[in-house]
Length: 205
Image 1 (cartoon, helix red, strand yellow):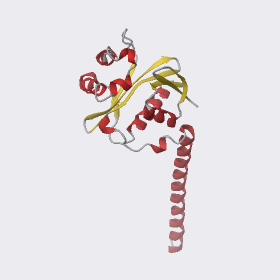
Image 2 (image 1 turned 90 degrees about the vertical axis):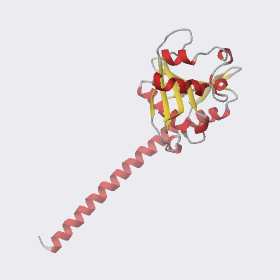
Image 3 (image 1 turned 90 degrees about the horizontal axis):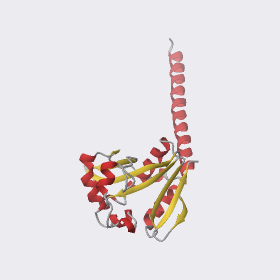
């Protein structure tokens, strides 16, 4: 092969490689734009965080989750007034039950640990065929303002969608403005309210 032929061959190879690189980048941009459109740009704002969201393990995680419920003012934010003096976290965790009166075994429980410390806890369950409820979303005070709440909300909704959800329902105290802002930025819409809580819904598009 002559020098000219080698040069032409090398040029063709470079052109092919460049085409492949441009194609990969273009596909990535299209996917990113679709996600931004679908979720209103919410996901693009989520900072990368260490640690992975994992399935709850009673033996390993229950004591830390119980402690998180009783840390600071978490108990007040997580529970309605009627349950403040009688809610059993142990019952909820041990039986994976959304009800305090029965053993429903219906809760999906997840935890996020960072450097071995419990950073966040999630509990959600299926209300009907295509409707799920987010029961608890908690971030430890020591890990707040790091984008973790956005990360775990994103994970939770995606997991519910994977399990067949078309609608996600949740409630938060009417004076919990930080949580309300989080949900609204994600795309939840307020659908109802009472003396203690605002109720929000998110629909699959």
